[in-house]
Every structure is written in C-alpha cells, then in structure tokens.
Length: 106
Image 1 (tube, rainbow, N blue to C red):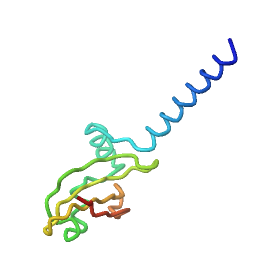
Image 2 (image 1 turned 180 degrees about the vertical axis):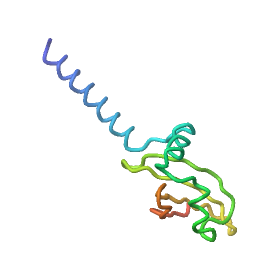
Image 3 (image 1 turned 30 degrees about the horizontal axis):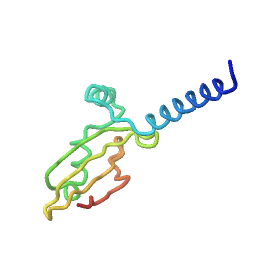
C-alpha cells in the first residue's frame, strides 16, 4: 500500500468516525422508541409533563420531538403562544424541568 493510499484510508476512517460522532450527538427517536421508553417508565408522557406547568405551555402545540441532544434525552417542543410567538422548549423527559427555552426569530 502506498503512502498516499494509507493517508486516504486514514482520512476516510477519520471522516466516518467524525460523522458517527456527530450523528450520535443529536438523534431523533421514532414513535415506537418513545412509546417503549414510556411503557418501561424511563420517561414520562409529554401531556403529563406539560400539565405540571399549564401557563407556560399554553397555546397551540406545533411540533414535538424526542431526541438525544448532546448525549442527553430531551423532549423538544414548539408552541405558538397567544402573542403569536413560536416558543421552543427543551424538557427533561423524567422530571419535566425546562432545560432551555427560546423564542424563534422570523
């Protein structure tokens, strides 16, 4: 194997490793995975967590995702509030604690 070929092989392996690490840093779970986690008691249903703070989560629910964000499982929800703002929340799926809240810009 030539020196050039070895460098290409190392580069290809490194690129694949970086892609794998990036992909694992943030990954959305599908419906079946979420339902399984709820059945196993590993996470709580979103409706239960939202009921803990109804004033904060009032409005129209636009989007919900359950994902690994930086190695941590979170609910990511978007709500259109009464003022017309889209608010994005990251919730701990066990405690319901708000980990992050943002107002999306237009």
